[in-house]
Length: 379
Image (cartoon, rainbow, N blue to C red; front, top):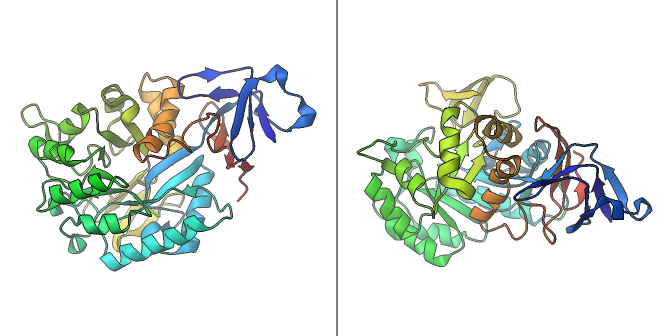
């Protein structure tokens, strides 16, 4: 049995001091530190730093030169190890609009890696399928030649590995697709890469959409007479929203507004591509040429192509640009996304009975230690 002492423990709604976190593979207790008998535990001294839940990234395409759409098991493990250093303990490798056979291969690879017992880094919760059921007019950096009409059967047939998928609700067949997936109940439908009107977005929500893919980006904007997808997502309390808080995709002046509108439905994501963790230069996304310069990743025509954001950096940015409590900020990158995909009974917060997925970080959210299923991760 292990315990963490001398830390500021980040609980779902508060931060506590003078307490010890006791765990093996799961969290066993959070008790007064004075009750701990050091000789009975493998003691980890947090040295006054924050002890927080492991982060949950439900939308990340790539990292360290690898991409989930490559369908390479060693690439997935390399990504998992890399993002664990950023405090991510659970994740959804994210595919993009590609040929269906390429997407299916990526699904199969994720199945294989997810089933492995060794600790290779952040745990795969399931796949996020971003495309191919999107609107060509809002394709962003998705290759148009592989866009397909929405197909509920494809999602349901792969529901053993899928956690969420993106669909443009205004496309022909989309509402039937959404209803089929919603009635099946295993995969979260997210609206994104969409040119839907406010009414069309609301029709998608009524059909079963309960999530929004990278709010503001690749969707109809909020206007006072045409509220668009953004208006529908912000105003419906059933819908959770992703936010790429890298200060580039969305002006940080909007973070406070989104946080107030969505509360515990706000989910920080990275939308990171293979250039994440790498030097500036030339990379690819879906076979397209991408140029990384600092925090910006752009296609040759200037279209934004994902990010190189780390999830702990997103936590820091949300803290800096909102008046949320630190516990609320951490929840946006842990408990909220875990709830959105139905995994909050196992991960997302430091509560008795949940997986011992824990990070220790300093006041600037630099990750010092990552613990996955009770084991200190060492890549």
